[in-house]
Amino acid sequence: MDPIKVLIVDDHPLFRQGIADVLENDPGLSVVAQAADGEVALHYAMEYRPDIVVMDVNLPNANGLRVTRRILNDLPETKVIILTGYDDAEQVFHALRIGAAAYCSKDIPPEGLLNTVFAVHKGNYVIHGQVMTYDEVLNWVQQRLGRYNYPVDEQSAENYTPLSPREMEILEMVTRGASNKEIAARLNISQQTVKNHMTAILRKLNVDDRTQAAVYALRHGWVRMETSSTD
Image (tube, rainbow, N blue to C red; front, side, top):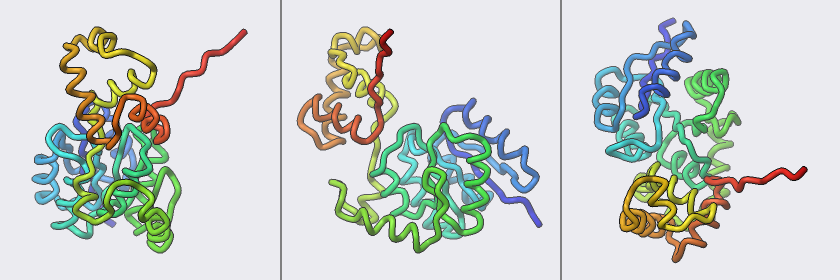
């Protein structure tokens, strides 16, 4: 039997190569290409027609969900595994709505990634390590219809854009109580740049102020409050 062909899409070279090393160690898998951005990913997908695409959700020139949808439009037999640095239930919902077969955190252990690849290749779905059948994942999605503020049509799912890495960095500092001045100093950027990022964050999250944005981040598990130990 021919090995399962895998395309890896991630803009961090070291992380991308780490995934490749894990997958290439299994004789049943073959990494046919690696891409650092959405356009290259689309090109390689058409060229190599992989069985599996391991897709980072945050890419330099395109959202990973949008790239996923474009790949699946042309290659419906391909299975896409979404990787993310942030555990966001709404993003899982939209990823499944546009046809992704799995959604995993980037801290997934090597064995977990291998199990996910083989599970989706067999036609299953995987959400944070839980293997589901089509009926089970359909029920999972239907239970969440209307729960989130975002529209649930496919076009809206495609356009769902999580915060950029820099916006997440700023939001985490805001959640921990940092002022714009403190954020600017830590990131070596101007206070006006921080304000611009905050404006974008509030717009994307559909909230009115910093406090609501911080609550949103905590509620979705993007930021976890640090607890100090007492002697």
